Length: 306
Image 1 (cartoon, one colour):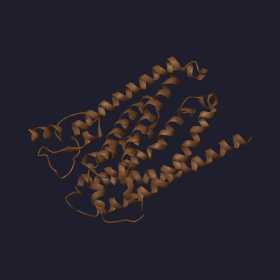
Image 2 (cartoon, helix red, strand yellow; image 1 turned 180 degrees about the horizontal axis):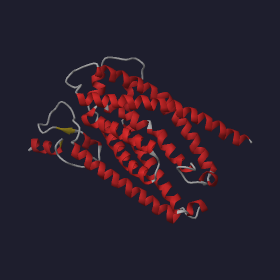
Image 3 (cartoon, rainbow, N blue to C red; image 1 turned 135 degrees about the vertical axis):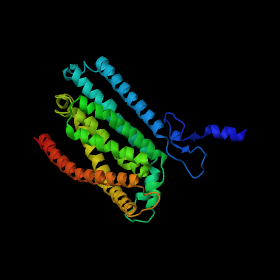
Image 4 (cartoon, rainbow, N blue to C red; image 1 turned 60 degrees about the horizontal axis):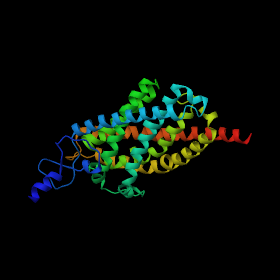
């Protein structure tokens, strides 16, 4: 009787189900292997992606409803329907999704303690190949967000640069899940580092090209507070922490690519190469964005001093 009760509690890998809690990412194979958790099936992950995308669509529609009934009279700039839809997208989809992955990752930040050093060891196998349920959860939500974001990018005609970003980001996230590699690193790269992106999504509402034209003049104090918050979080997440995690990831990836062990399959190596290219490219962008932030900050300070 106890054996039957125990088997009912297990999440079998081949069982199709929605992955809504951290426990649902702790799966076992059909034999009930005791060696540790294994990732959920691709079918379960795909089903959950579809569910999360539908939740994001519903969340966006709720914000459109709330902005129409409770915010359109706050200022003439909010009377325009397109402006309210832009706000709903940036708040209910973009900022919400970034906040969600950052929150999940922060809850499991203890997995990242091993990276608080510049010393390298030979235990790359544990960091790259050991399945991390929390990392998989972050990757799954992040991939779902990229699916919804891709649709929005095409619908709103954001441009080819954003489309390419979503393609590469989504591919890296899926590669982290299947074949499954470096999932612990996703807690930072696709989790905690998105704290600054969350603030940026809110700040994007004040941009004349991708946001609501005139919103910066309507709510200048809000824009200034978000701007200062973004600079602080960007420096912490992208300038101070990003190089540290990049140092460890590239080192582990290089060690893995030099091996031909049972875990270093062609699929895993291809996923690692793609992640390394994406990581290096994004690292270069951090420097470029930092330069732009400095220039914009100088312009805003000069306006305040006049």
